[in-house]
View (cartoon, rainbow, N blue to C red):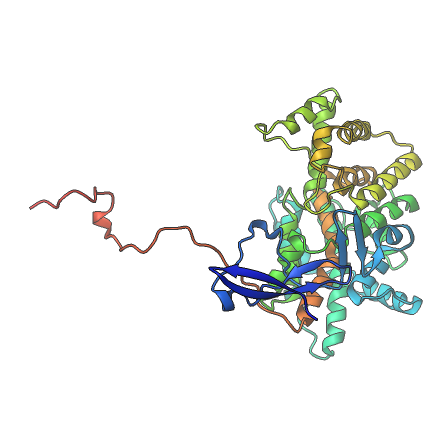
Length: 438
């Protein structure tokens, strides 16, 4: 028997179906609301609105749970690689050894980018932000790599997925090298996905880059933790733009643009900037905590709290452990980490932050991890985008294959002027009560 909710409007009752998910979460299906009642719901920011049914990622903000295709993110961070996790998200199953080898070969085969794309990089203004460049370059990929008419639809889609996953990594490293005026380093078939990226970023003819497996593992963990996160801002953008049946490159470009925002993908960069501000002010977090508690002060404590998590972000625990491990391995003392520890210790004991569920999130530690790896600050959000790519692809794929697919078209409640007449330009600005001259 289907559970229903009763909605009463002006004494008339309407039955609305209740949908139950595999983990017991429930939703009221309002898809027929406007047709049956003439009304819509109003939910600014969509905090209480489900836009789709999905099999990809499960989150429980109250319990601090995050799973990809049912597998806890903690297990994937410990045992999996980023490539294996990407395969899981896109294909709904862990790969066999044969599957993983085939997928890795595809990533290697498609890792190079068209040489003509270099001209795009060289003609962007020098001060252009890497996220703006990446969004534009991903959109341009469609022109360089059009549809493969000789392939089946499934083959073409799989090649497109591999092409994006591989080339975005190459584009990011290439943009960094060109920004420095250095020689571009090409991907190597001898290196893994993450090791290849680090080598393309930091190898140099005068100082060959030595692959450190601890840094490779740290990057694997960073990208795995960011691979998907349910219907967040950028994922919703990919699904919304994709609902118009645009090509995958255009949909992913939209996701990159959404991720660019400081309240989304730019948060890890904002955390490091905040920690530097605290450090430069003497390292005492108390004044900053006081400002964060002041409702009249626009200052925000970056890296604390989350739209969904009402307890400790499960990714933050993993990233904190990774952060400690690589700093110990590298025997590198980061003064910002000392500030971060003091800030976290004070915040988690503060009644205001406890009452408002403002616990450290993944961004609080990920910026320090990226600093330790050697990633420059303005590339932090690009790193997030590379990690989120498998999630965007899997969400786009699921939405395209959804038999209930609809073009996304939110409604609104209009609060503007009611109908009024057009005023000729010579009469505008006059007192409407004044009488015309005779």
